[in-house]
Each structure stands twice: as C-alpha cells, then as structure tokens.
Image (tube, rainbow, N blue to C red; front, side, top):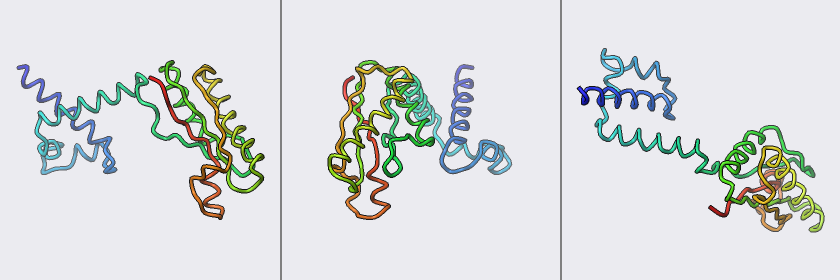
Length: 182
C-alpha cells in the first residue's frame, strides 16, 4: 500500500515539474500527450527513484531560496546616461536582494557603482557613487540595515565593455551587487 502511494506521489512530482520545464509545454498539454494513456507516456520515461531524487533536489532548492539561503543570481542594475535614477524594471530585482539580505543579516552586500567613459574621472566616480547610493536607499527602504551595505565607486575604471559606442556605454552604466559574509 505504501509503495503504491509512493509511486503515485512520484508521478505527481514528475508531472508537476514537467509543467515548469523550459520546453514551453503547458502542464495540460503534457498530461494529454502520449499514446492514449494521458500523461503516462511522459512519466514512463523516468525511473521513479531518479524522479523522486530529482524532485527532492528541486524541492530543497526551492525551500533554500524561500528561506533566503541563495542570493538572487542577477546582480547588475543598469542606468540611463548621466542619471542615478533606478529604472522601474530593476525594482523587483532590488526587492529580491532586499528580501535575501533581510533573511540573512550576517551577509554584506558591496554596491559597486560604475559609469561610462564620458565625463571626467572625478565626475564619473561621483556618478558611480550616486548610483550605488540610490540602490542602497531602495534596499534600506525594504529593511536592509546600513551595516549590511558597503558602497564603492569605480567610475569608468572597471568597464564591463571596452567599446566606444552607445552599446558599450550602456553596459558600463551600472551598479553591481556582490556579497561577502555568511
């Protein structure tokens, strides 16, 4: 009886994760595909033990992320020319970093401000600092303590792209978020 329950649970886990895959197949389409057996043809490709292990690993990863153990993987915020205004499309990213830092009070984020090559070195260092401070203010509004944030400005000195055109300059106008501590 317990074995039948376990096999059924493993099948549900497999079907659920197939719907989340990058193949673009919707869960309903995956359940209806196959040779007249509903989703069984899709599930039949997997060994139940392997599928259960994969499901447990994914569940642990999701739980770790929910508990704040993993920092968001995207760590760059880009800016418009000669501006320290955070663009609306980066607000969710900053909010995700704020949630991570709030859940991990021993972690420290270094906010590295950068600018493109236009303007004097002094101006670009100041602009990089203003950009980093703008991100720090947003993190602070989400409850991140000042002790968890360090601000550094490199101005134009650490270019992400060495080109001399608008595309390169866009990649260089940024704040990078890097973590230290446990």
